[in-house]
Every structure is written in C-alpha cells, then in structure tokens.
Image (cartoon, rainbow over all chains, first blue to last red; front, side, top):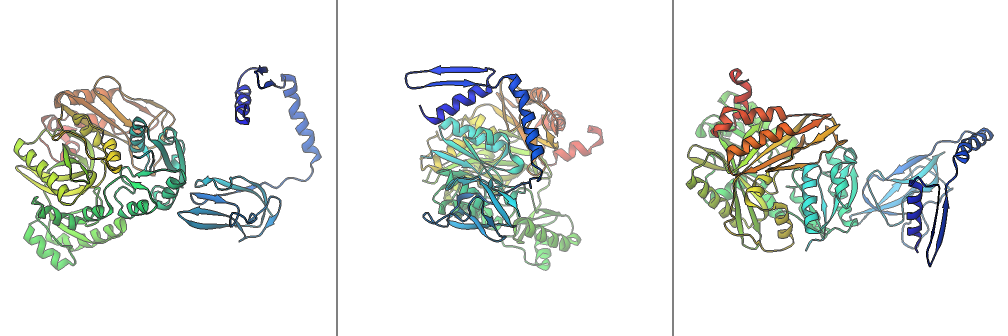
Length: 139
Length: 441
C-alpha cells in the first residue's frame, strides 16, 4: 500500500457523507473518523480566541509568479546551495531562482525587499506563465 | 510515429485537432493564455500549460514559451492549427531546431508561398494563369500609376507578405492611387512588418474557389476537390461548400490539374490549399495557404477523409495512402457562427440529428473573450445534393441555441434563404447584395 493510495482513500472519505469508515485488508488497516457536528461548531470559537490574543496584525504575504514557461531551479548548479532559503530576508535585485527556457538560464530577481515564507514550485519542474513560485513577506 | 503532440492554438481548431489525436492514440498538450483558462481545449487535452497573458503576442505568438512547454512536457511534435504561428517560417525553424516535428510545410516552402510576388512567379512558371498585375513590388507612385494604366482600373493593392484579407486596398481611379499606395504600404508594415506592395487587376464580383491538396513530400501530391468560399463579408469567409454550384467540368478538371502541378513543382509537404478567383470562363491563381484551413470539414465530409490525421501521418514521414483520385460523395455545406457580442455562454444546445457535424469549443459556462477570433462554432452538413444541404443547414441553425452571447445565426439563415444563394449564381458581392438592397431586406 503506497502513501498515494492512502491519500486517495482519505480524499474519497472527506468528500463522502460518511462520518466514520474502517477498511481492513491483509496488509493494512485504516480507521477514519470525521469530527461530529458539535465539534465542528466549536472550532470557530477556538480560532476567535486565538485571534484576540494575537495583538500584532500580520502583514499580508505576496506571491512571486513565473513570467515565462520553463524549468524551475532553486540552485545555480545541481550541487550548490539554493539562492534563497525560507525565513531569510532578501534584498531587491537578489536572484531568487533560475528558469530554464530553450537552453537559456533566466535569473529571476526579487523586485522588492522581502522574506521567503514558502517555496511553491518543485526543483526541476515545469512552471507555467503566472504560476506562483514563492510566497514572500514584504519588508 | 508521433506519440505526443502540443497544439499551439486555441478555440474550435484546437479541440478539432485534439479529437483526431485521441482517435489516433496520441497524447495531447494544450496551451492557453490567461484569458482562456478553463476553455474546452485545456480540459480535453491530457495536460495544459499556461503560456502568457491575454495579448496574442505574449501568449499564442510567444514562440519561446510554446516551444519550452512542448519540450518540458516531452512532446514529439507541434501542430500550429490555423492563424497565429501556422504560417510563420521562423517558428517552424525554431521548432525543428528544438528537435521537434513541425506539422506543416518546410520553412523554405512557407517563405516562398508566403510572399505574394514570389508565389505569383512560381504559379506562372507552373503554367497557371495569374491576374494581370505587377510581377515585381511597386516601389513608387509614378511606377504604380504607369502600371495601373496598363492593367486598367479598378486595381487592388496587396501587401506582398499579407493574407487573410488584411492590408488590401481597391483603387477605382488614378486620382486615388498615390494616397492608397501610401496607406496600403503603412498598413502592410504594421500588420506584417513588411511594407512591400504589389498591384493586381481587381476582378469585380468573382467566385472564390480553392483546391484542397495533400502532399507527402516524397513525390505524391493529390487533390481532394474544390471548396466554394464566395460568401464573404469584408474578405472574411462566412459560408463554404463543396462541390461548388457554379462550375463547368472541364474548368474544374483544369484547376485541379494546375493545383497538383504547382505543389509538385515547389516540392510541397503537408496539407495546403490553392485559392483561385473565378469569373465567367476564366480563373486566376490568387494564393497558397500553407496550412489546414478553417473550412476543411466540408472537404473531409465529401471525401470521407480526416485532413488532420493526414497532416500527422505526413509529418511522421508516412507516404500518402489514399486512392488517387479520391472519390467524393454528395454535397457539404459549412456555416461559420461568429460571436457578435462576447460574454459567458449561459445555455448551449447544438443541433443534432442526421447529416450534421459541429466543430466548436462552446459549452454551458464557456467564456467568449473579445481578444481573439470571433469564430465560436462551425455547423457542417453533408447530404446527397446542394438543395438538401441548404434545407438541413437551415433546420440545424434553427435548432441551435446559444444564450449569453450574440451571434450571426440569423444573418446566416437569411443568406441561405436568399434567392441568389439558392440559385448558386453569385460572387463575393453576395453579402453586400443581400444587405444593401432595400428590396431584399
């Protein structure tokens, strides 16, 4: 049983109207349970209390999207460290990634000072025009 | 053999190509601009890649993004469809340089036939009549005036690099000529990045008849008969049919032979069309369309063939395997449905039943944007004869329901029911005749 198949089962369960499900076979056994309606109602309350505690308003993040179609690389060469790391601040003009298109390496630069919150594209994958590459927090 | 194919186009033609690929077991990759996200071709293809924002020059004309998408999705070949990059030799070269197959003629053939002046020379050398006119570009207005006097007014100015009805200008008197030359040249420059103009005799109200050809690039050239595309509005085709209602057998045979001879002579490869102007007992070579054409379904129906399939087979290096001559059956008629007001399609119910084929990218919820061609559907019917085709077409158009956008359906029905169209005796002025004559309104 592969992880992919487990996730498929979970997705099917989540989309179904079932509240509980159990599957047992020779190699595995899985038990899934959804929160009851009462539990669901309580959830928003918890979030609200958390929000009240958080007195610093979070700055909204932005996404850096791909301006071309190409292959996404986080590193300048296969064995070198990535251009940018999550959590590190970067300055305007710093290279954030390269996108290879027709054997040309196009270096993408940051257009504003920011901090990388998340890398949204996979190393070596095809990125489309307009596809989000990084989630960043402007500084 | 081609196993995976990127379609560098959008709309109904992209959908049309994907369908044949599915029939042939070929994996397909669609490309789309941000304005076409969710369009039918992106849903039907095995995968889809966004190649740019809505302006064509940044998306459907963006060679680099298209070729990179094909390369990264491991395609063997690119089909350019109709319009956009279909007749761009530079694109064909770039595709081949990237190690991919371009589904179309060789770049050098595209250059030859894409130049109006050079293609006229080729036609003449192959013994095909061309309209009286300049065999060289018109460089200044004095030379132009002299030439126009020789040919006799009215004359037509055309962009040497042009096509699709753009950059053309009709001149009726010597007085209009100098200014018309300047404007035509400027238009040619802005549309085709080439201000070269040439001059031809303007044939008043001719028939527009074209011959569909297939050539395998290995010496075999066959024709699939003619299409009559005389119903036009501002040089844009509206209704096409095969066979043409107006033709004597001897002239049809002669044109078919001429067309095959020209393609043989220039060593053409792939599907292509030769357009002719026909008036009374004369015909003249007009131009070569080095690609599949929008109106190809009428030929497919009468010849029981699949032109897209043949293009793919030829590009794979296969020899043409069709009977010669290709037998043709009955009569086919196509109506182009164009959007006259864009929006989101709230209801779409295509006509069904015998003898009807629909090529479209519409569905309930489809967005018709103002950025591209207005063509939203092609209704094609195939029956034993022209009279039945017209009746079936009128039935089909009345059955067609498209809500949320406005289309030219009513105007198409009016043309079909008009006396000149029914009689079969009409030329390219038919639309003006019907819509400008108050008696026929």
